[in-house]
Length: 276
Image (tube, rainbow, N blue to C red):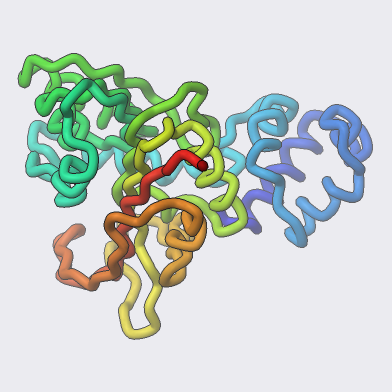
């Protein structure tokens, strides 16, 4: 997801396939100037262009965006009997229940479900849950957790760069995932989620926020160039036309990676109210 690396990958793959910039542009129905800008890192492919670009270059969206190291990172975290994030549901899950309690099996989409603790919690409470993650290890552990708790959840492997909802959900939920999305792609992502939310449904999510007085996570096993912190209030702006139930920013302690540090996070629960 680093621009420089993406431009290098596009250029390298194009030359390996013996394509000129003009030929690549023609196959994508764009100008060759656009391809030149990508390779010079003066512009970035639109997110909806990435799957087509990956197909033409015979590679993957993950590889184009330098995402493989992120996938490997999480596969390693989840490759144990223990649950890396524990089994306690995220606090936002309880906040969601206050806004849209399971008086019927509301449809939930859990984006970046990890090892499945929140998805399983929702299913045990009576919601109809669909959940996905980019990590194969995480999905397998999530399936085992669901089986252990005797709940049915539709799990599948996908990542945000390839997947967009194709049906409506009553609740779209994501925790600690959207910092992998670059700023240029965030409005399109939020617009897609909003479009596939049923009337009176909610979107509930949190994002890591950059602050000059908080140092980046000191975990040297992770490639921090793949993570893009948000600005304070940025998430809220994308939902300015919805009803806010939760809108908060907080700084909290964290010990992931074994080194104590702090994060700043914005949390939003917003509801889609039918226009009158």
